[in-house]
Length: 241
Image 1 (cartoon, rainbow, N blue to C red):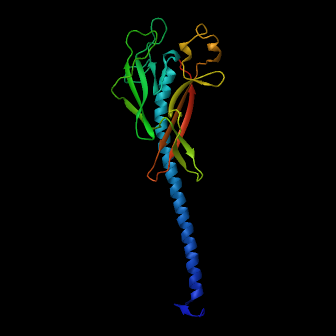
Image 2 (tube, rainbow, N blue to C red; image 1 turned 90 degrees about the vertical axis):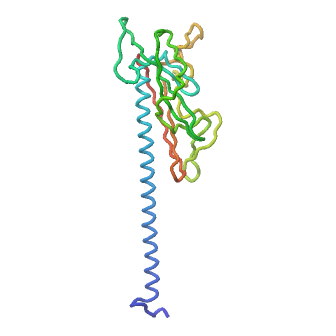
Image 3 (cartoon, one colour; image 1 turned 60 degrees about the horizontal axis):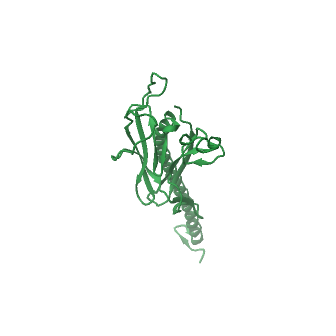
């Protein structure tokens, strides 16, 4: 029966050809799916990186141009003094005494988003005439400009599961994906501004302080296939004024 022919081919030859065709088709399908996955991952990484870069550029400009003593860290963000004209990021003026002329307050705050993410909002307010001490006012009630809308929420964390995918989990006590800390000489991260205290009221205080601040940003995204994409970055810098 194996010698019977169908259109000039034996049944065995047809079976072998069909099996080879299935193998080739499976290989092509695997290459296509992997290429699609790589392309999707690359696009997700690009969009996350682009959003992060834009926000990071604004944050870095504000932090570098401020004074360390003006930075006030809160549980949901921070405020600082800026020498730039309100609504602009131009140059700065110098007072007759050689100091920087402060022109506005800049406020960064986290606002509620969904059950995984929060929005990072930047707003400005008048600095007024009473410059010293540099004590930032309450951020304006009106919402400002949204820099990022996918900041990881407080009490959430991203972990890698056994299948290699990332997922968002509940983790009590975890800070949000947007924090600013002051860097200590021993490597610790301080929530209190070094300029708020001295050795007089806290003996030995200056022994563990530096002018460095550390900014942390972590953003998350959940594409249509429910896979979690995340990007985290730390940046240390020194306020220059």
